[in-house]
Each structure stands twice: as structure tokens, then as C-alpha cells.
Image (cartoon, rainbow, N blue to C red):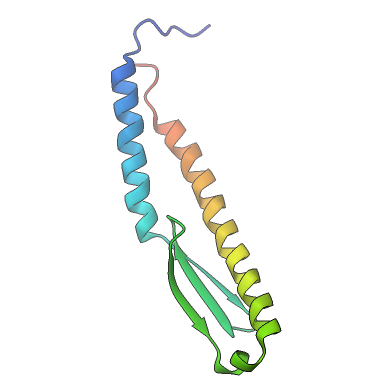
Length: 101
């Protein structure tokens, strides 16, 4: 059984807040990119799920159906990449909490 009587809730909350702020800062620096259609669409987001770049090949401008399919695929791909990174980061953060001093 765990001994929680020596745990300071304020210290724990401070650790969590500091880790969350660092994760947001790190997220802004992390870039996820997806290329679809052999590079005809290239979409980049940062770790905070903000779109930072989008490149569309000119040949897609006259083919709305292909453009739509490739954009949706690229969006789903980068979102999946960012989500997986966030899960890994959360697990690492939990491992970094100093719960038992």
C-alpha cells in the first residue's frame, strides 16, 4: 500500500503545471508533416495541432475530388502523428512526477 501522508499536494500540482507548460512550449517546436499523392499535398502541423504549412501541387487545382481526398488523408495522418506523440509525452511526464520522495 502506498504512503501518501508525506506527499505535498501543492508540490505535486506545481510539478504538473510546470510539465504542462514545458509540453506546450515543446509542442510548438515539434513539427509533423504528411505528404500525400506522391508529394502533391504536403501538410505540416506543430505539436499543438496548429497548421503551420500547406503545399498544394498546381495540378490539383482543377481536380477538386482528388484535392479533397488527399487533403483529408494528410490531415488525418498528421493528427494521428501528433496524438501518438502526445500520448508518449504524457507517459514520459507521468514517469517524471516525483510522487514518492
